[in-house]
Length: 315
Image 1 (spheres, rainbow, N blue to C red):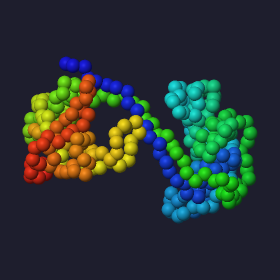
Image 2 (spheres, helix red, strand yellow; image 1 turned 30 degrees about the vertical axis):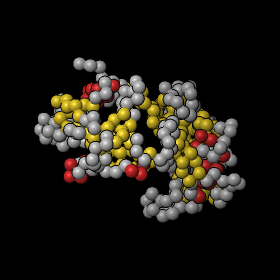
Image 3 (cartoon, rainbow, N blue to C red; image 1 turned 60 degrees about the vertical axis):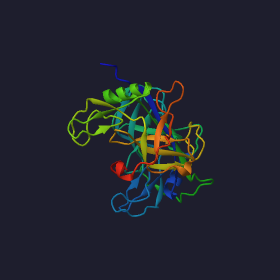
Image 4 (cartoon, one colour; image 1 turned 45 degrees about the horizontal axis):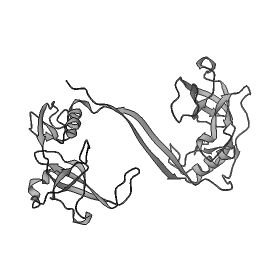
């Protein structure tokens, strides 16, 4: 049996969001070494603050300032920190109920080892040297010997100079992907400029790319079938936004293409024709680049358009 493929993959994108008045005040406050919470309808103080009461759904705007010291309510040891985590050395993830708050904040605790961490231990904020208005302005928590403050949290108007009104969070997921037996065969066939699917032994549908099992019948698919190379455009979209690291002139067309002999449409870029002339039913064929392991794009074959009835079940 041929070796099943696997490869490291990274999914990464910047997530940009605007902030309402509560979150704006909270993050701007961190920049100023001030921790703000919000009072709920029943008088509890939530840190981090939220804009709507989780019980009553009432809008919340009553901000208060809490202490930068608190108590660990629960914890877990992280022996192998990953890229982008708060500390580069082993640390504890902790939920900390800051003095004056009724809920706990998740962050990192800098401790020499798991034996130095206990539920109920006292901790305080270690502020980052450079603060920009983000949760990372709290570099981490560190052990603290002082007692809890008894004073009621003071009201705060949430007003700061140069308030933070939006954030950009860099989302990233690193993982190893294996396509499995069926798609490994499909990818290896593409390298030979062939497109291979698998037929369900029950309903006889041919799936391209193959999935290893029929999603309708729930049975394994092992009967390999070569399809195409030509196919029919079933649906399409015109792309006007440039993707990062993709050097394709805008606008371009991305389409669902039902290869001849397949019962499932696959994705592909359409080229060799003005974008505004691409249409449903257009007959296309794959174009391979020198040394390419998969089709670079699909182009018109010059055949008459396919009748709608021949592909309507794949739209």
